[in-house]
Length: 109
Length: 119
Image (tube, rainbow over all chains, first blue to last red; front, top):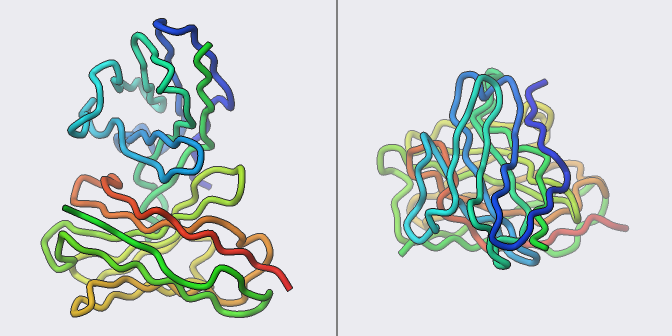
Protein backbone atom coordinates (compact mmCIF):
# COMPACT_ATOMS: atom_id res chain seq x y z
CA UNK A 1 0.00 0.00 0.00
CA UNK A 2 1.02 3.59 -0.54
CA UNK A 3 2.09 5.41 2.62
CA UNK A 4 4.25 8.28 3.83
CA UNK A 5 6.47 7.84 6.87
CA UNK A 6 7.56 10.64 9.21
CA UNK A 7 9.52 10.78 12.44
CA UNK A 8 7.08 10.95 15.34
CA UNK A 9 8.79 13.65 17.40
CA UNK A 10 11.47 16.24 16.66
CA UNK A 11 12.85 18.87 19.03
CA UNK A 12 14.62 22.11 18.18
CA UNK A 13 16.10 24.87 20.29
CA UNK A 14 14.60 28.31 19.86
CA UNK A 15 16.24 30.05 16.91
CA UNK A 16 17.87 26.90 15.56
CA UNK A 17 17.14 24.92 12.42
CA UNK A 18 15.10 21.74 12.20
CA UNK A 19 14.48 19.44 9.24
CA UNK A 20 11.46 17.15 9.12
CA UNK A 21 11.51 14.17 6.79
CA UNK A 22 8.78 12.38 4.89
CA UNK A 23 9.54 9.17 3.04
CA UNK A 24 7.43 7.23 0.56
CA UNK A 25 7.28 5.80 -2.92
CA UNK A 26 4.84 8.42 -4.19
CA UNK A 27 7.43 11.15 -3.52
CA UNK A 28 9.57 9.80 -6.32
CA UNK A 29 6.80 10.85 -8.69
CA UNK A 30 4.86 13.66 -7.00
CA UNK A 31 5.70 16.74 -4.97
CA UNK A 32 5.01 16.76 -1.25
CA UNK A 33 2.93 19.41 0.44
CA UNK A 34 3.26 20.21 4.12
CA UNK A 35 0.59 21.18 6.67
CA UNK A 36 0.95 22.69 10.11
CA UNK A 37 -1.64 21.82 12.76
CA UNK A 38 -1.81 23.44 16.16
CA UNK A 39 -3.91 21.95 18.97
CA UNK A 40 -7.63 22.34 18.41
CA UNK A 41 -7.17 23.82 14.95
CA UNK A 42 -7.59 22.64 11.38
CA UNK A 43 -4.40 22.02 9.42
CA UNK A 44 -3.03 24.83 7.28
CA UNK A 45 -0.80 24.66 4.22
CA UNK A 46 2.79 25.85 4.70
CA UNK A 47 4.74 24.43 1.72
CA UNK A 48 3.72 22.94 -1.62
CA UNK A 49 5.11 22.16 -5.05
CA UNK A 50 8.73 23.05 -5.64
CA UNK A 51 9.24 25.01 -2.40
CA UNK A 52 6.24 27.32 -2.74
CA UNK A 53 4.79 29.14 0.25
CA UNK A 54 1.19 30.37 0.46
CA UNK A 55 0.72 34.03 1.20
CA UNK A 56 1.48 34.81 4.84
CA UNK A 57 3.79 31.88 5.50
CA UNK A 58 7.18 33.10 6.80
CA UNK A 59 10.22 32.44 4.66
CA UNK A 60 11.83 30.47 7.49
CA UNK A 61 9.75 27.56 6.15
CA UNK A 62 11.22 25.81 3.10
CA UNK A 63 10.79 22.54 1.27
CA UNK A 64 13.10 20.26 -0.67
CA UNK A 65 13.32 16.67 -1.79
CA UNK A 66 15.70 13.90 -2.78
CA UNK A 67 14.56 10.67 -4.37
CA UNK A 68 11.66 9.25 -2.35
CA UNK A 69 12.16 11.66 0.56
CA UNK A 70 10.77 15.15 1.10
CA UNK A 71 11.99 17.61 3.69
CA UNK A 72 10.45 20.54 5.51
CA UNK A 73 13.04 22.86 7.03
CA UNK A 74 12.36 25.54 9.60
CA UNK A 75 15.32 27.92 9.75
CA UNK A 76 15.36 29.90 12.98
CA UNK A 77 12.47 28.13 14.69
CA UNK A 78 10.11 30.28 16.72
CA UNK A 79 7.95 29.32 19.67
CA UNK A 80 4.85 29.62 17.49
CA UNK A 81 6.22 26.92 15.17
CA UNK A 82 5.57 24.26 17.81
CA UNK A 83 2.91 22.11 16.16
CA UNK A 84 2.22 18.87 14.36
CA UNK A 85 3.38 18.77 10.76
CA UNK A 86 1.95 16.44 8.11
CA UNK A 87 3.27 15.74 4.66
CA UNK A 88 0.92 14.83 1.82
CA UNK A 89 1.21 13.87 -1.80
CA UNK A 90 -0.78 12.43 -4.62
CA UNK A 91 -1.15 8.69 -4.41
CA UNK A 92 0.15 6.27 -6.99
CA UNK A 93 -2.73 3.84 -6.48
CA UNK A 94 -5.38 3.74 -9.18
CA UNK A 95 -8.45 5.89 -8.42
CA UNK A 96 -7.04 7.08 -5.09
CA UNK A 97 -5.90 10.65 -5.12
CA UNK A 98 -3.98 11.52 -1.96
CA UNK A 99 -2.04 10.11 0.95
CA UNK A 100 -0.96 11.75 4.20
CA UNK A 101 2.09 11.13 6.31
CA UNK A 102 2.03 9.85 9.86
CA UNK A 103 2.80 13.30 11.29
CA UNK A 104 5.70 14.86 13.21
CA UNK A 105 5.34 16.68 16.50
CA UNK A 106 7.80 19.57 16.58
CA UNK A 107 8.73 20.83 20.02
CA UNK A 108 10.57 24.16 20.35
CA UNK A 109 12.76 24.17 23.46
CA UNK B 1 -12.79 34.90 0.62
CA UNK B 2 -13.04 31.13 0.62
CA UNK B 3 -14.89 29.49 3.49
CA UNK B 4 -15.90 25.89 4.12
CA UNK B 5 -18.07 24.62 6.94
CA UNK B 6 -18.85 21.04 7.91
CA UNK B 7 -22.17 20.04 9.40
CA UNK B 8 -23.77 16.80 10.52
CA UNK B 9 -24.46 14.71 13.59
CA UNK B 10 -22.09 14.72 16.53
CA UNK B 11 -23.09 11.21 17.56
CA UNK B 12 -24.06 8.18 15.51
CA UNK B 13 -24.66 4.59 16.50
CA UNK B 14 -22.65 1.67 15.16
CA UNK B 15 -23.96 0.21 11.85
CA UNK B 16 -25.79 3.46 11.02
CA UNK B 17 -25.06 5.66 8.00
CA UNK B 18 -23.25 8.94 8.60
CA UNK B 19 -24.07 11.90 6.37
CA UNK B 20 -21.86 15.00 6.45
CA UNK B 21 -22.35 18.20 4.51
CA UNK B 22 -19.69 20.72 3.49
CA UNK B 23 -21.13 24.13 2.67
CA UNK B 24 -18.72 26.45 0.93
CA UNK B 25 -18.48 29.97 -0.42
CA UNK B 26 -15.96 32.07 -2.29
CA UNK B 27 -15.49 29.69 -5.21
CA UNK B 28 -17.42 27.64 -7.72
CA UNK B 29 -16.96 23.88 -7.82
CA UNK B 30 -17.58 24.00 -11.58
CA UNK B 31 -14.49 26.16 -12.14
CA UNK B 32 -11.64 24.29 -13.81
CA UNK B 33 -9.27 22.66 -11.35
CA UNK B 34 -11.43 23.04 -8.27
CA UNK B 35 -11.84 19.96 -6.09
CA UNK B 36 -13.30 19.39 -2.62
CA UNK B 37 -12.04 16.56 -0.44
CA UNK B 38 -13.10 15.01 2.84
CA UNK B 39 -10.30 14.27 5.30
CA UNK B 40 -10.63 12.83 8.79
CA UNK B 41 -8.49 12.68 11.93
CA UNK B 42 -9.18 10.22 14.76
CA UNK B 43 -8.41 11.69 18.20
CA UNK B 44 -4.65 11.94 18.67
CA UNK B 45 -3.94 10.36 15.29
CA UNK B 46 -2.90 11.36 11.79
CA UNK B 47 -4.89 12.86 8.97
CA UNK B 48 -6.53 10.45 6.55
CA UNK B 49 -7.79 11.43 3.11
CA UNK B 50 -11.21 9.91 2.35
CA UNK B 51 -12.75 11.15 -0.88
CA UNK B 52 -12.80 13.90 -3.48
CA UNK B 53 -15.17 15.36 -6.07
CA UNK B 54 -13.83 17.61 -8.82
CA UNK B 55 -15.07 20.35 -11.15
CA UNK B 56 -16.16 17.76 -13.72
CA UNK B 57 -18.06 15.78 -11.07
CA UNK B 58 -15.50 12.98 -11.14
CA UNK B 59 -15.20 11.18 -7.84
CA UNK B 60 -12.29 9.47 -6.12
CA UNK B 61 -12.10 7.42 -2.93
CA UNK B 62 -9.56 5.98 -0.56
CA UNK B 63 -9.11 2.41 -1.69
CA UNK B 64 -9.65 0.88 1.74
CA UNK B 65 -12.94 2.74 2.39
CA UNK B 66 -14.36 2.97 -1.11
CA UNK B 67 -17.12 0.41 -0.53
CA UNK B 68 -18.53 2.47 2.36
CA UNK B 69 -18.17 6.02 1.01
CA UNK B 70 -20.20 8.09 -1.41
CA UNK B 71 -19.36 11.70 -2.25
CA UNK B 72 -21.68 13.99 -4.16
CA UNK B 73 -22.07 17.68 -4.90
CA UNK B 74 -24.95 20.11 -5.25
CA UNK B 75 -23.61 23.07 -7.18
CA UNK B 76 -26.83 25.04 -6.77
CA UNK B 77 -26.41 24.93 -3.00
CA UNK B 78 -22.58 25.07 -2.96
CA UNK B 79 -22.47 21.85 -1.00
CA UNK B 80 -20.52 18.60 -1.01
CA UNK B 81 -22.01 15.64 0.83
CA UNK B 82 -20.19 12.57 2.16
CA UNK B 83 -22.03 9.47 3.26
CA UNK B 84 -20.37 6.63 5.12
CA UNK B 85 -22.28 3.42 5.64
CA UNK B 86 -22.04 0.89 8.44
CA UNK B 87 -20.06 3.10 10.81
CA UNK B 88 -17.95 1.63 13.58
CA UNK B 89 -16.35 3.17 16.71
CA UNK B 90 -13.10 3.24 14.71
CA UNK B 91 -14.75 5.91 12.53
CA UNK B 92 -14.80 8.32 15.48
CA UNK B 93 -12.87 11.33 14.22
CA UNK B 94 -12.89 14.98 13.35
CA UNK B 95 -14.03 15.23 9.74
CA UNK B 96 -12.77 18.10 7.59
CA UNK B 97 -13.64 19.27 4.14
CA UNK B 98 -10.93 21.05 2.18
CA UNK B 99 -10.52 22.85 -1.14
CA UNK B 100 -7.90 22.03 -3.73
CA UNK B 101 -7.74 25.02 -6.06
CA UNK B 102 -5.80 23.12 -8.68
CA UNK B 103 -2.30 22.42 -7.41
CA UNK B 104 -3.14 19.08 -5.76
CA UNK B 105 -2.89 20.72 -2.34
CA UNK B 106 -5.47 21.58 0.29
CA UNK B 107 -5.28 25.37 0.43
CA UNK B 108 -8.44 26.01 2.45
CA UNK B 109 -9.97 23.92 5.22
CA UNK B 110 -13.17 23.92 7.20
CA UNK B 111 -13.02 24.02 10.98
CA UNK B 112 -13.91 20.33 11.22
CA UNK B 113 -16.69 18.44 12.93
CA UNK B 114 -16.16 15.82 15.62
CA UNK B 115 -18.22 12.72 15.03
CA UNK B 116 -18.40 10.06 17.72
CA UNK B 117 -19.60 6.56 16.91
CA UNK B 118 -20.99 4.95 20.02
CA UNK B 119 -24.02 3.02 21.16
